[in-house]
Length: 463
Image 1: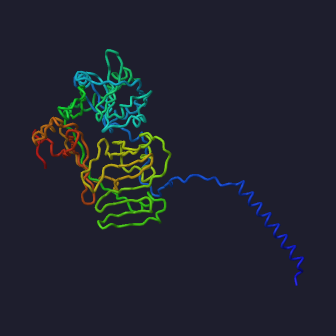
Image 2: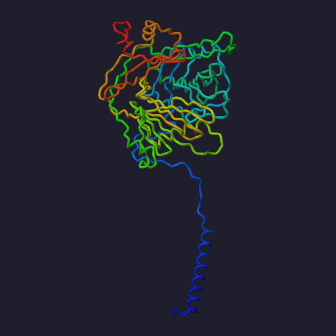
Image 3: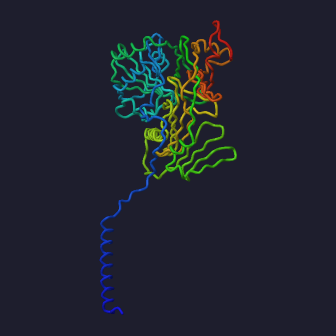
């Protein structure tokens, strides 16, 4: 038998050892606390990234640059012109300061548009000032009434021998003037010389009628201006192969763990992919996806509109990237720091316009307090064109003659521009040169350029 005294000694030694071990572990826990951090949204690293990465500055490009020479003479440079690229490099050296409210009378509008020499940066729609400051150097404070602009118009004021810049907002019908670092020599002997050989344009004005004769409105006018070519030109019609975005690419790009994603098929044929938080919806027969993503708790601080647009840009960079060519089109600020950002797809100098519900011509992102809440984008990637045909584009005068023949009141036209109509054919996509006719700033008419082209000197009907 084991001696009881010896057994008690063993128990005592074991107890002392356990007490000492407990003390050591307690010491380690007290002096080696883990560094606790708040859980933040997961970072997604797509394994099969398709597009390129872009900075916000790459997406902020004027639709065109207009050159004004007085005596109602105007020319235009577009994205694919060498002159456009040269001037975009020069803009980095400009700065604008001392903004003042500067309403224009009819006489001032007439002098600015018809008689004064100048240079105009024209955007497709209104760009917020905070976003525009990414590419234009703005010094000092800007009046809060100037929330955004669609035109920046530099002109030479002979009385002061100075170059001023007008920041114009068609949406708000407001104008502000700023001082610039551009000299009259820069404008007249350098910048305007670039545009001498460019296609000449005719300037057209749409004057918005008063909404009601019983409502007192500002007596100062605001001119809605657009330009049409004085001469005919050619523009190619393209047939493009396209690559569909695969299910694997979607899952790898938008979900942290594709293995956790479930597929749900609705009665109408809609596919839904979800991991329990984020989801992607693809409607039957449509070539687009709608992403819904959860938002995370953030500090209750004000977020600038520029940061909302930046977040939308970064999100696309990290999720599939920029397939094909896109540019910022609109930024719409909503309630409670929510914004909708739209990027329009382009082919060269011309925007893509789709009237087919199966296709989409833009990326639409909804951002809530600096976090992407939802996104809608196309599921096709224009690959290579396998055929093209040059089509004649009539002059502005010929277009107006055609529209009048069709019973269109040209006095109600508020904007006209060229675009590519995106049409899905069997197994490929057709890009058709088309006129976009904006009526009273409310709705658009899309006209195939082949419909209004000249044959035998006369506009012809629809083909």
